[in-house]
Structures are given as structure tokens and as C-alpha cells.
Length: 186
Image (cartoon, rainbow, N blue to C red; front, side, top):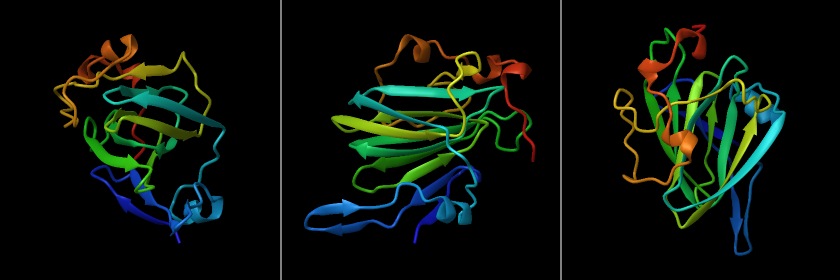
């Protein structure tokens, strides 16, 4: 049986699949539509992405609007600190964040619905990170929230991450306009 638990953001869920381990290794179901629907994740996934990164790389914080994208994420190799930030205008948790350590050892997954910025930093020598996405990547809808926005105050486990130019130049939350932010539907 797959289990789920909440985070500091009620819509962001940590999923703990049942892992079968023996002396040969481990096996678990990374997605099972009926079981995940029973947990409240009733989504169709249209795109899978894989990224490989080395220690200290921080990717994010990304979100899409108006073509929003939910993500079911997990680590296939290594370890990351994974973060979601509520960027839904008028949400009671607007600007708040939740973080969880995901690794190939703990097999945890994280469900990040539409309306949340997402990012992670690699805390192992390297990591292979997998995303199941509910919508196709749309560069015209993509926005980047500054990884170290002081108004969000994420407690990252590394202080000098390696960033892409896009992530280094992310916008502050207070600098995003109303048309760049998804709406809270309560």
C-alpha cells in the first residue's frame, strides 16, 4: 500500500511507496493510477523528464502560468532537497514554502500541484531526478522565482549553489505581476 503525508503546504504531498527490498536490491511502483487517485492525486501525466546534476547544483524555482503544470517528482539516484513555494495569488499560504529530502534510499516522492514554484538542490555527489508532468513544457508560460528571495526565506542546505543564468536571475515574488501569477481557487 502506498502512503502519503502532508507538508507545511496542505496541497503539497509527500508520497511513500511501499518498497520491497531484499539482498538483490529493491522494487516499488513509481506510479499506479488507482492507488494515487485514492490518495487524491487524480491526474493525467503527459510528459516525463529526467535531469542529472552534481553536488551543489540548484534548479529552480520554476512554475508555469497560464499553462500550469503539476509535477510528481522523485530521485532515482542520489539525494536532493526538494522545495515547493505557493505562488497562487490570494492563497492563504502565498509565499510560503515546504521542503523535503528525496533520495534513492528513502524512495519518497513529492506531489507539487499547479500554482506552486518548484526547485531542488543536490546534496549528494550527483543525483538523477525524475518528473512526471501534467502539462507539456511551455516556454512562453514559464516563470522563475528567485531561489533566495528573502521574502520567501527558504532554508536551503547549501549556501553557494551552482545556478543557471535563468535561475540566478529569477524574479522576486513581490516583483511578479498579477498576470504572471496563477489564481487561488480555494
